Amino acid sequence: MFYIYRIPRTNKIGCTKDLKSRVEKYQGCSDYEILYKTEDIEEASIKEFEFQDKYKYKRDRIPYNKLKANQMKTVITPKTTTFKDVKTKEDFKNLKSTLKDIVLEDLGTVVISTKVLEFIQARLQISQYNGLGMYVNNDSLWKFYESQQEETPKKTNTIFDNIRQWAKDKGILDKGDTKTQYIKLQEESGELAKAILNNDRPEIIDAIGDCVVVLTNLAALEELKIEDCINSAYNVISKRTGEMKNGTFVKENL
Image 1 (cartoon, rainbow, N blue to C red):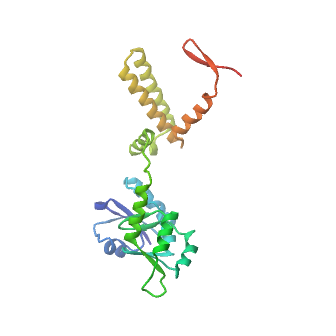
Image 2: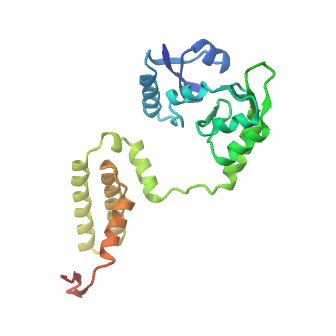
Image 3: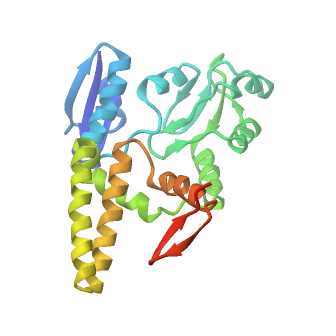
């Protein structure tokens, strides 16, 4: 049986087959609740993400079913990550192409990259347990991984990213509808028209911003990004020729 559990004090939702070992013993927690249980690992993986979204917890980087597939080749403890079938460093080369991201419970997720693989291979040690394979120290692996992240420029959210996150937090992207967003756009357009007629500059600024917000949400509900829509439009208008007539640009008919 697979259990979806929640630990309120740590804002964690996870999946396991062994609550006693995984949650109570390994994580030292007794104040947890079972949210869902199933015998299907695929269903468990889906439900884990659904509950993480419901409680607004950060999603795990790797679905539970993919993580279990990876764990068939590795043994991850709080201190080490052991690669079962690796007897020599040369053996590790055969595992590279199939190795998934490594989830270190107390530290974080190590995303596999060429540099990470090179680091692991260089520092592999033979396990003290006969026949188990070779291992790498989790602390040293995590420190190396973090150092690589510091060297990589972090992506800065754009204003459109912030709008979409706001819309998601408010439930607009989950429960909203493009038709109602279009009606909302007409309302904001009316506010803009009123502000222009009144020559009310603060209201003009506010109304233009509101229109952009609604258009961003409408695009997202259609599984589009407003940035792509803008780029598409610009690629067309940038090639247009024409002239200004009565305050309006009139394109040339080709």
